[in-house]
Length: 238
Figure (cartoon, rainbow, N blue to C red):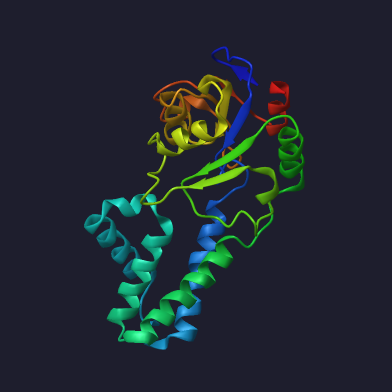
């Protein structure tokens, strides 16, 4: 652990999920590749669409509606609708196809279990203080084995702007009803997690599970309170 700034007595913790508790990017890549194959098999009229076509639909959707940056679910449904519609599907067939494809991807995107060590840590922490998850993603926390550890799971959406916006931090603070500086937010992103948490009045712990933690190589706006190399180091705050 590297301590950059002192923290008060920690009374609660909030956690980012993707890339903090598990390596998310390979899971997304595999689910995306699998979705293209699934669409080609189940909806052959759309089999000509390549990865770049879907990326173009995504870019256009975000240009048309920037709020979609905060809602991965709505964004994917809109992308699927556009691609399938332009491939000739319409009406009830289109509605059904979008739901089937979305459900397939969402299951595969969440088709893993968080490691035993991470779950054991969360179990120990939850016995001493309330824990809340704050994520910009939309992973199914029940499917990946995390539901039992968090009192709330806050996911970014149109109604909950993504971090570093203060909305989800404020919601967590209102639920916890403790001094904000006594809440330690743990996350991998030095802008979305660390900067967002500090701006919201939280203490912050930087931990990335999926890349070397060299702060000089990171886009830093503000230093975290602590840098955690092993999640078990969080037990020091009990």
